[in-house]
Length: 399
Image 1: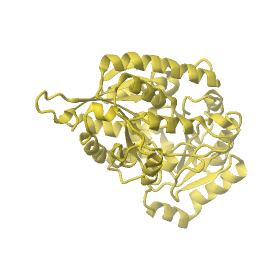
Image 2: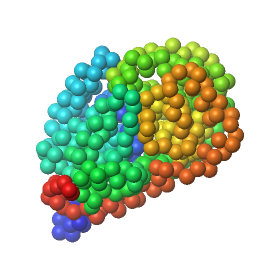
Image 3: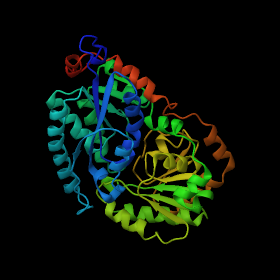
């Protein structure tokens, strides 16, 4: 057993999590809240990236409001001045690695938790290995195959090989990690943490929705979230504009979320802002968790290329349309339609998602392939069963 069971010292297990963007924090939140409720654990956050900038409305304040200790704030964000350069993303990663070195050395946690496939978990995995700190990677073993590739794909698998413990979303992801030579005892299929958030978030009244989002929230609307992809930065603005225009043409309102801080985000923001005055468009940067969850549950469809459409929308029975190459070939349920980023294909998919009653009913009834909303319970049980630090750090390849 790990230190949580040390009856001599009674030392609590210190678990820190790294987060750099709002969507990532929302996925980390359920597990960290669950660990915080356990008497054997002490939790905290390392906060970096867009959380500390206006891009997502200084979303670090949400972490503070949630009552989590913030162990360190790492100012590594480089994109505000140069939102389209890949070079600035590399510089941000380097600054993050430098900041993590200081923060982790000072805090010396028993575990660092990180999620996904961006540069933040990759830098965290590197730092943990050299500092001798066991790491827990959530959502490893996933994969996508966009035309032209995407750096996130390589970063995800590199992070997996550098991590010590793996909490996967599906059995297919677990199988892929096993094929990479990871030892079976380090891996547990637990499901998508975002489903726990949707399952446990308190219901929001129609009046509260209108108070937060305006009168459009009481009518039919589409949620649109579109991010840049590294291999297709140049075509992203045209795809986003086509998606917005086609959503508006359906007669529904369109709630548009701010893009992630990837190269190309500044151009996407300019396209989004050009629709700000449209009577059917609402643009948001950051929403309270309960309002965001309720907004998703009541949406007629989720459009764009956010993982929300693949990972969470199926759990709440909402049709999703994935536009363009981002997420291409990723494991998806019947709720997802993959389309090229042109007006004709987007329009056709919207007709099915919004107006095909048989399709909508099938989506509503389908079993979610990414879990049942009880990821936290499985994960905590698994973490409690892990061996001591030396055993965790002594990785070996299994073939």
